Length: 190
Image (cartoon, rainbow, N blue to C red; front, side):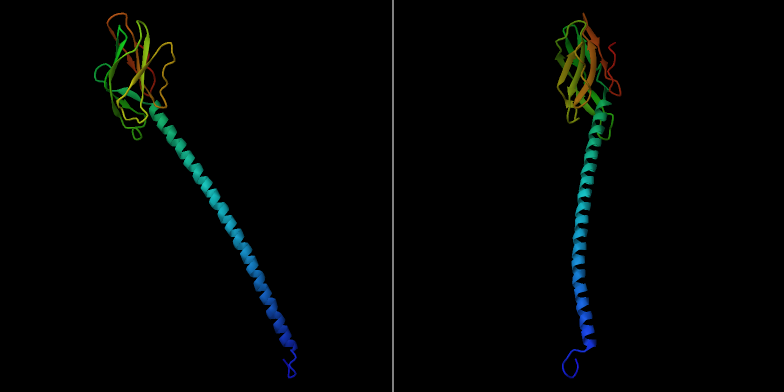
């Protein structure tokens, strides 16, 4: 200010520059806030994309695990029977010997012992009896055997169904059947 208290031109120039810088700073805060909001939105979008990718990876892993488990069962077969694996007599009585179940993926499903049993199949002379059981836990042990009689569709090995093999009911005496052969194929009846 000059001696009269009137602002000098230099003071007015300095004051105008200070006000201009103050408004520029205020504008910068708004721009920074806008940039921060945009950055947060981008981060949220990236997290959403990462979550979706993680879910897709989890779904893919679950599908892979399911396929691996199914393949292990489909490629499984009975082995090491105590005696003949499957026999039938002329009354329709079918005997399954104790045996091991060897799975296609021994890391996923180690070999397990399976307890045999004797069951009335309902078959008569000449009928082909196909033997299977369900074992969802792949634990072996005592299982409940089931049968189909040709020409009914044979049991499909998969899901939880474990095919054992087949036997023809003889006209007299007894007859040996054939096991499912690796990798899980039905053996032709002898």
